[in-house]
Image 1 (cartoon, rainbow, N blue to C red):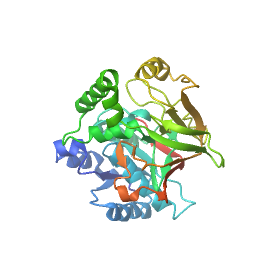
Image 2 (image 1 turned 180 degrees about the vertical axis):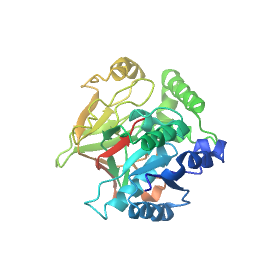
Image 3 (image 1 turned 90 degrees about the vertical axis):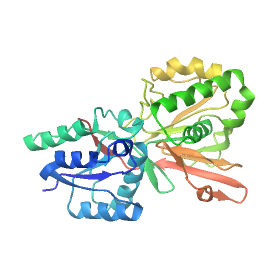
Length: 325
């Protein structure tokens, strides 16, 4: 029986640094599974269909946050064709640059050890521990963490360099804080907010109309460095957490850091902070965002608009079971 199907992303940091790393994983996998390295979305869907025909119960993601989003979106699309079939369990190998999503789901360790421990438990006939997480869906994509406004502009600056790394991310944060403190006009120019109407669930009237400086929609609580701002991302409830500052003040942001660190509610007068199953944002300007670490949408032409308004709808996706070793 095939227990694990690995999908490799050839552009993942671990594989770029070590092109033979995929063979290490395949050797570790042994007789317990198969692997593939798709070169595009059509090939990925073809491979996932084959995995489904073999009833592969575990899909392993050899890549980072963007890889997880790309593969999971295709996987959900395939399984939507068979609504009575449950999604396979997910095994995140943490082989990307930052790995925010695996960390937020409680997955720890190096890629080869994550896979080795999973295979060892299968050999011993022991059950694999899992956690359940909600997902969000936007324009046919499925993931865990969406960010717009200054978040998207921060990520655009981060990706402007050929080399991306945690060190480069730290430098980008430092530059952003410096601009916000000492050159606020330059900061506002480079890191623009999103101005939009916010509709929650199926309400016809917006709950807010104005500046969204740092809007997020998330189904994971922990975003790294101990910060847990999305405390309403409850896997036991069918909801995601929508959070945004209504305006922007670096001093206000600094004051809120302890609350975000311990998963406490932020200042209700300055933030939007609520659970939702659907959020619709309508803006006079194109809505640029990041979805699980990648710019979204990638092409300007894919930004949804109707006459003079641009719109993005974020809705609750399917629940997934993630293996935690």
